[in-house]
Amino acid sequence: MVLIGCAQGQTCTPVMTLPVAYRSKASCLADRTDMVEASSGLGYQRLFAECREQARPNKLQTSAPRKANSLI
Image 1 (cartoon, rainbow, N blue to C red):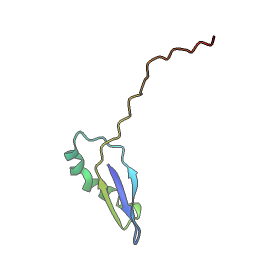
Image 2: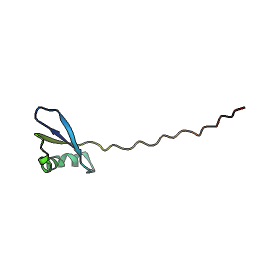
Image 3: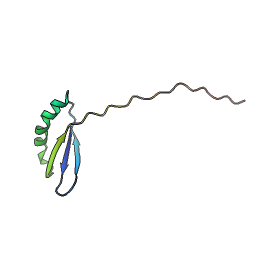
Image 4: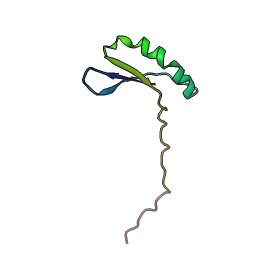
């Protein structure tokens, strides 16, 4: 979940990513209001939460072994 804050007359920017892992998008959506209320003291005119999928690390790409070039 990402908290996004909007200051008066400015564009909205991500404020923080909360270290919470949800089992489903529905459970994240259900928790947004509570998280925004708990974070209301951050000083933004408007604050909202957005559920985002956690980035998964890419698998390392491996290549086939290379043959050494022999010099003659």
